[in-house]
Length: 246
Image 1 (cartoon, rainbow, N blue to C red):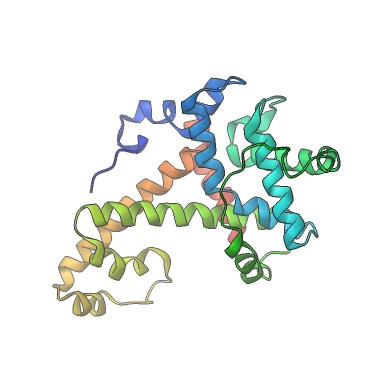
Image 2 (cartoon, rainbow, N blue to C red):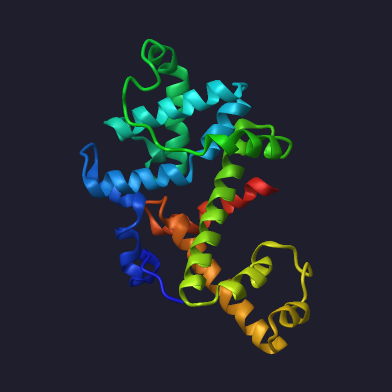
């Protein structure tokens, strides 16, 4: 499989080109690269913010308005003003920014109509509430709900990247049959059953699963790195995110 992601660069170059380091390098200035990197991060990780706001007791309509208004302000200007220790992790920085917004700015924004004409991110509000209701019983704490949904969004992004790579290599059917080995409990499907469905030798299926898992781990680390400023934080961030499921 091939990829044009930063993970394919030399190890020393990976973190020089992650989304969050591009944003941090721009500081309070706007550049097409930093704006694009920040918008991609926000589009990927907006639902954890919605889940956090809902867990704070806001209804569906108010939560939509809050998150949309937050992003309008966050993307507009000076989004890095007042950076603190959270700057190393986009996850922590985004949540701290949202908490500040909820505590200090939402009431003021009511004088204007949803962002005062500022550009809004196009977000999938149609499925947001249904998705929240499904997850609502899993984690009642707003902060832990945020971390849990962040981890789920991360995993979904990784699966989509891996699906696209397999499709580009002409292995879409193989991926669809074997992806269960990436996400399901051990024993959910045997290699023999997968081999039968694919019309392949069982040994070949085991090799394919091994390669798929290896690439999945590589993409997972790369996706986490996109939200960090320091290579040494990847393992710690991974532990923190998946601790949300325990």
